[in-house]
Length: 401
Image 1 (tube, one colour):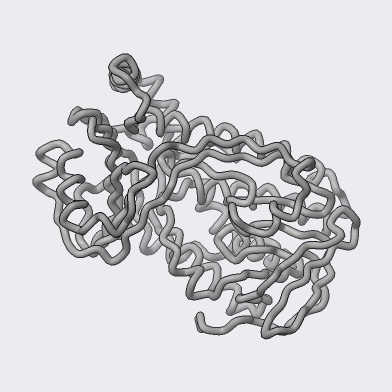
Image 2 (tube, rainbow, N blue to C red; image 1 turned 60 degrees about the vertical axis):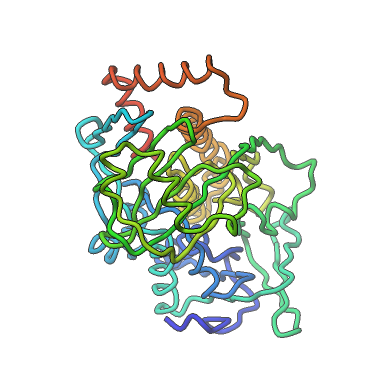
């Protein structure tokens, strides 16, 4: 696709659904609706190249894969994605493999979020559906009525799009949730006192499956994007700076947090991307305000420990797409009326799992010797209990949508 263009399709003045945000949530919603004949416009404040430059998660639940199949964009995922039947947990060098396939009959697919976004972008461009990039000063109006509209500025000119529904898929810092009065929202948040320093490198992964490691020095994760590209993380204090971490320092720290056998196998190399991601849990309630609906990171954030961010956005979009199709094709608002409660029920379960994984695997500044023993006991119980392993596995591969 031509990622330098600021717009695909003819500039509209009306659409059925105005989607704010061209990340995977907005693009997937647009694609699911487009395939059923619903007209959509996507507005994105960044350029296509910027959207594709964001390095994000890469573990995809089978339910999210099914939605991508439904959207007609799963061909490359099935060709290039890596099927993982399990994952490995490590606590102070002791190892435990969680066998997803044996415990649940399901697996996950490792396929980068950037690639999901690219596939959705390409499909939308090929179909001629309208995406407007580099839309400045986006503002939402009259969404408490049945005639909402969206305004934006491009090339110094103000434009307005009338619509029936607005879908806010523009992330945690986007305009959709910020357009609501404080009195309309309840928010729930936990900010963790650490972040993940991540590095992307063109070296083969250290293992065939992900390794989640707890160590007295902090958490570490060994992940991958392909058989030749690896993604590694180490827990760092929230005030750390990327500039203070050379590649050599990162590799030295990672080795110390792994068992000797894994550390010996680790193939190091120059980083092609390095960044620090803060960790937080966040939920906004409700997700509907008249004709404005929130989905994805506009509605919630989860720590990446449970691999739920992209998957939770996909389930939101699946619920919202079904509700909108019912609204436009069957002239029923029942699905839209139920959307917020339906989505939030799954969101909170994913928040619980992500919090639990984070609590088990990280070193918290306030954790004393008692707290460390509790973490160890939790790991030992997990190692000895098939029932506990099944609970972890069914949450990791994704609860039913």
